[in-house]
Image (tube, rainbow, N blue to C red; front, side):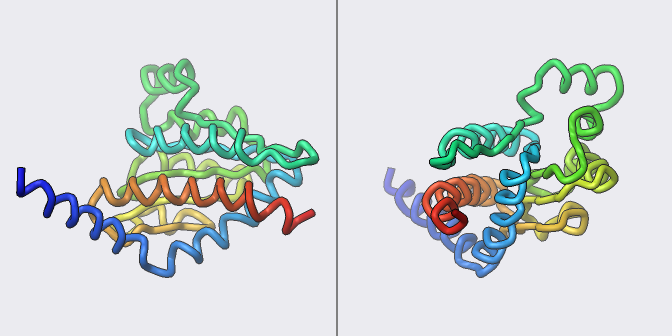
Length: 194
């Protein structure tokens, strides 16, 4: 049991290191105006990712949709493409898994909407295809990634690249980014933009 404590300390220190870079504040400051603009103009924000990133996408939709309601009733219109099980499995089974998000965007999205992709490696084929489709449809694009950014970094308007190659630390920070955005939009943005 004594070897557990040093492991826990090391894990926490490595996660803390991944949070210490200026990229985090810079990323948040670039994402907030995109999200506020989407809310102001009744645009839809589409969130998506795979595995743990799918969970983060779904979690963020719940948080941003419920916790950020303004006094004037203005809400974020947001959708987690990972939660549409019927469409996701139909596209995966009948066409290919790499198109499960891009095809949903082709059906649902309108110019000016936002595509918010999450991929720890930055190289998930379905996230990349979705961003390519989003750009073709005239959507704003945001990507959370790690491991140097992968291909996703160059495909999106605002990439937030966690400086780590450890998937657990990357996913920890991605969830923190989503909580930070939710908290800021709840606590600061409404009073700052009335």
